[in-house]
Image 1 (tube, rainbow, N blue to C red):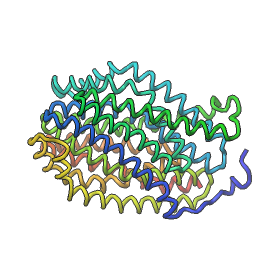
Image 2 (spheres, rainbow, N blue to C red):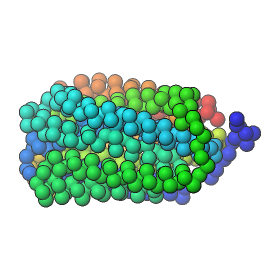
Image 3 (cartoon, helix red, strand yellow):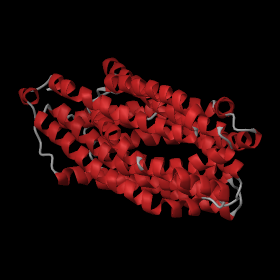
Image 4 (spheres, rainbow, N blue to C red):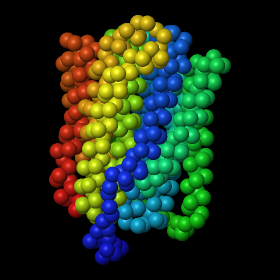
Length: 444
């Protein structure tokens, strides 16, 4: 039962320092992910073959569509653990972690078994030609074998971030992506395994990070109060988690469906356009991960405030994380405008891909500013576990994206495709912002 103190609230200070304590290490951590994507692309790009580069991009997209759909194992766990942390309920924090691990293990085994089916579905959807499809098939069939490791890492990171332990989250991501990058260069480039080496490097990095994360968490649990029998499989708690996860899954799937349509439409403009957009989307993901550190701070602080029933703490967390987010978005845009052409030259040796990517570089650079509000609002709504609103606004944004895509790409080609992406990002951010005041009044 709730105590009288819990009912009246447990306010806590939210300062720039507390925001930065979570955001800075997680920004560094998240930046290792697009750096990995850049490394993968650069390794394969050294072969000078647009079909290989396009096949890797398309294969990675299929993988991301599947696994980002399961990102609820990270974000849902973060929100639930943060709220339990705000209530001071250490036992429920453990229970949430083990529920997430069980779901991750079951889903990972199923995904690994379905690798051939997912590969065929991806090839049909992308329709990028025979050589692109062959590269996709190799990448997906190998990399999907690491699905159990990948999803368990989501659960581990979700628990860590729910407690606001940004430094530990940074360590785990550095181990995961650091091992991956080193092995990618060794296997893919030095040993000449190409796309196969890139895929095996990813599996090895996921496995090492999972083992380290489990060791750290289990050691902590052994020093804590024992988890009562049956708490993990509590029916009401499981149903609540499944409902939350369902909404986040639909939201994540819709997000990746938009990116999949973006890639597929680019493929219809030719292999060179597909490869150029793939290079530029790496920059978009770098900017996005640059902002995700403050979105993660919003998740933890907003979730903790909802659990503690501390309205002032909640409002201040929203205000500070959004302010910092816009500042960094402007910085990311300026950096891409200044250095983007040099990064393109590093990533690929194909001259036709370089030339086209430089033309559309400004469209990519400004995605940081058009997307920052979407990232920050996602963090707030995930932490507060307002998953239904987030799901509904994502579906609305997806419909707007499809409408703009269908209207502009026949007229403007690849330019219309990039305009549709910006409209999608802006719709996500402002639709959630419009819902925030009413949700806040209801919650507190």
